[in-house]
Amino acid sequence: MSGHEELTTNRLSLRRPANLASRRVALRAGLRRVEHLDGEGCDGFDLIYANNLPRLGSRGDCQ
Image 1 (cartoon, rainbow, N blue to C red):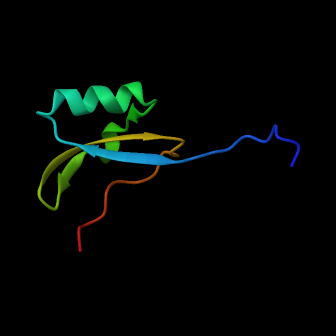
Image 2 (image 1 turned 90 degrees about the vertical axis):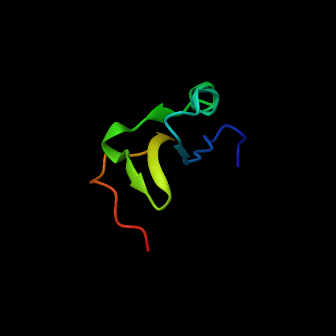
């Protein structure tokens, strides 16, 4: 390793719509909203924030 390789990390964060402080933390951490993945989670509606996430299909069902 030459020390100049780029380290890529993928982060995914589920946030409750009413929790504004938590949503701001996600944005400050460099995550962006991935609206096409927003939807009902296992215990309520989730807003999805991510980085380095390719545009994929819709959310799957909870098991």
